[in-house]
Amino acid sequence: MSKTIRLINSNLGKVRTHQTDATTWGELKTEVSDMYSGNVKAVVKENQVSLEVDTASLPEGKLSSDEFDYDFAIFFVTKESKAGADYESWDFHRLRRKVASRGMNNNNKTKAQLIADLRRTDERNTSSVDTSQLDRIEQKVNFIADAIESTLEEDYEIVFRDEITEEEMETIRSIENQL
Image 1 (tube, rainbow, N blue to C red):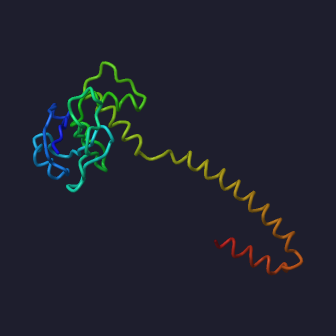
Image 2: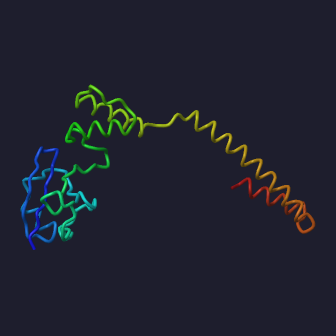
Image 3: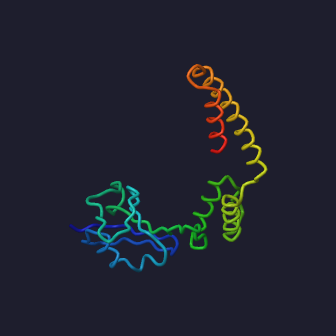
């Protein structure tokens, strides 16, 4: 059964409608290879399914609303690497949305400025934490842990005082200190 698919790659500035009998992503991608290049993946717009393996089935039937003259749309989006996003390949509007999502001002900025803002926040998110704050937190946690341990030890001594000798209690404390 023939499908009408809307193909959209905003990074390349390409949009077109494609007619196909393909049933899998592997079949379709050979037909539409001009729509993607480099580090991109195909995502079905209507259900957000990512088409990453050649055997992935294409949707059957009409997923888009009746006002559109196609069955479904596929967006070609840049894959993000583990080292971070390839912001240079993003279109201006995507950059603005990402900057806004991080709570930063995106008004009257060039693409280069938006990329710089995103990289700065990426660095901040991966930079080292102020260790003095961690030290203070660790001291508080240790204080609370010691207080709990002391309370538990007192309860332990009270509950088992008749069953454990003082010598055995010293052995227990010695083992706890080694841990």
